[in-house]
Image (cartoon, rainbow, N blue to C red; front, side, top):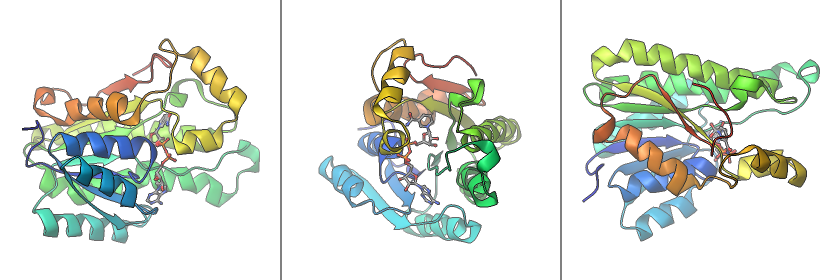
Length: 246
Ligand SMILES: NC(=O)c1ccc[n+]([C@@H]2O[C@H](COP(=O)([O-])OP(=O)(O)OC[C@H]3O[C@@H](n4cnc5c(N)ncnc54)[C@H](O)[C@@H]3O)[C@@H](O)[C@H]2O)c1
């Protein structure tokens, strides 16, 4: 028996990386997990099935609110409700701020705070009285990071969204929290060269990459599980001590 038996969870961007680890951790704890991604999620579905869990995936461009609404409706049609929402997906342009096009600037916002708000809005009626939301923030919000202005700004907006929704939705019986992970995911490895990876690892108190399932996913299991019903509006640092903020 798992602590999330009978719960229905949506995890965005769970075809790979941190989202995939979160999806696996939730499924192994008994949740039925719906994966919204642009990439095929066959591998994560196979891993969940091999672990005796239940998962479903559909292509969804989270930048488009009509696609988000249709995805949430499909999940409700399939499993009756949504109890847990994890806004994990991101895409971002990297480069000097002064060279960013309008589309570059928009990408992080569209896939970060806007997509998170679309999912939160669509899931709200189902999340009432016991639902949980977890949003993904970044340690770069604190200190900035050269070449990542669009990403940093979008992630800071996710922080604001998390705090504001936690205030509004506490009375609806919904907790809204965030996590700041560090993991050498496909996304991180494609953005950083070997030297940068070594530099980041040197800054950590725990000098290794987080494991998307056992380090990040298990902490999300806590936030969406029965032990965290009094935890809302907070940000849990899951980054080996790489950044210090809340
Ligand atoms: N990996 C880290 O160290 C780290 C650090 C800080 C914050 N984060 C946050 O954790 C989350 C996951 O990061 P990651 O490193 O696993 O990223 P990743 O790039 O490896 O994975 C992102 C996923 O989002 C999906 N996605 C992108 N655009 C989409 C769209 N329009 N519609 C649907 N899906 C889309 C991608 O297909 C991919 O599966 C992100 O929110 C990121 O900002 C990660």
